[in-house]
Image (cartoon, rainbow, N blue to C red):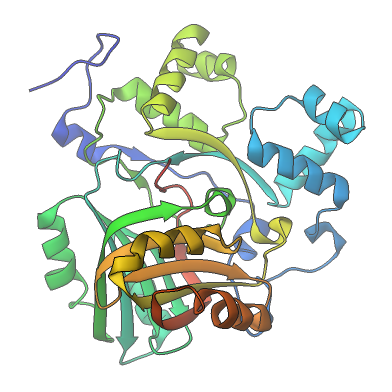
Length: 364
């Protein structure tokens, strides 16, 4: 059965939606090189030279765009006290070196995924090779080699119980080199403002829309594709490319945003945010009677990117950023472990990110 969208056009059916894909944009080489953290260096790979660090004016522009990616050059120029042409030049530079990205986020729950799965893996071979095999799975959103009690951390988005069963019982066990797997199923996830602004991309898979919770037709998918590629382009430009009236594009964009499926954003890579050195996963056992207060406290920590309440070997899984090893130690020991109700923590710094998608996030 084919449903109809709000405008009367044919919507994507369940089977057709499962085939819908949004292709992630091609990233500048410098950005791809700078999105793999290395604990040894304390900073992401290939960060050299003054052009890698934004100055105070650049940071002001980035900060304003993170708050409102649709701010005009005129508005930015007025706030920064520089000319519009200077704003244009600076934005082009920030985009060319990968410090600033204009894109769109897709809410994974609204897209039709039922399960967010976190796997911590011990290997029987070279961890990087195993992580690369894990990262090749279609439903893998992130895979990284880590230091600590496990060798790999991987995040998966799973459409339904059948796909979950296949992942857990067929696909992961079939990968050579995988030893022990600790699986956690998320019952609730939260992304912080820092997490929505945090851009790290590596071998990004196509963005799937397995079963959107709103009617979505081919035009909606084309609009989302345009926004993921460049969310700062105008409705007029998108309409011209797609052969559709500007008003139709604007109406569709407003609907996608209002329903929570797709939201345009500006994102910055970690160096430009000032939290550059390390990304780490922290698996925690907690007093579940204090989950709400633990979430409120943990997500209020500026370095927190992602919070998940889970069922499995851990009760809570966090993703955090830190400037360097010492900062990470202090963050975990002084702030996270001191949260009332936190019983134990297992910190796993990422040392080699082989896959990471910044586009699928839960939106407020």
